[in-house]
Length: 135
Image (cartoon, rainbow, N blue to C red):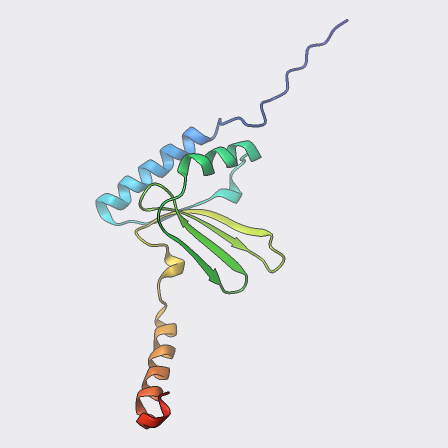
């Protein structure tokens, strides 16, 4: 007796069309009214092949940034303006969050008011020092 076994394609893209449609819908909402949104990729049942296919399809745009705060973060504009791929790593280099953010600029890159106040205080301290100590 011969039993035929079909192995699922490890590079299946079954979820990709739905994710891309969701991104397109959210990008339209951003363009029309400025509403930002996030898609948590780690919460989705993506195979490694689907994940790589999504990364390939979204591609890379012109802007990348890295952030070093409680672990490294990589912020990459995709080839679609307003669609950002954001990956947060822990100290061991493991991915702890993988997000698609639909925004004009990712929220994580925006200056926070408390940080600006700290910077302002430092700037005022520098300004108030005698000119010879500004070097």
